[in-house]
Length: 108
Image (cartoon, rainbow, N blue to C red; front, side, top):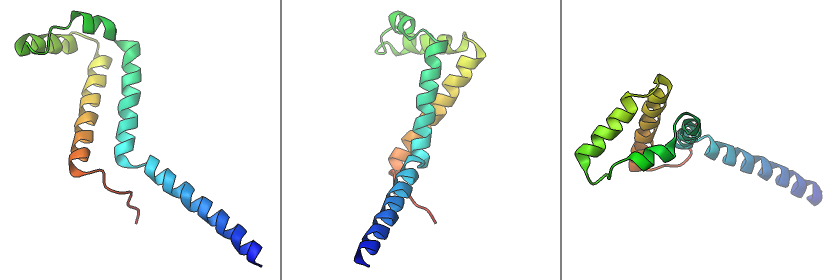
């Protein structure tokens, strides 16, 4: 009898652990991070990052840096513009979540 209870308890605890991990993986902040990572991977096929960094002026020169970044974004294809806009939006939401505190996984 004790063997059956131990076995059943092991099965239940494995399921509880699986649900806990699944809920952690599906946390809204993590979903935003996954989407931002996917956009970063997508952008490597659309943009030559090595050329951008080679031609980019020093960020210390704020005015020149701003002109470079704005021209780089405005004079590119629409898919790159959308990718940058969505990535910036996701980054802002992640910063907001971090400032609020990640919180715990809540399910009700």
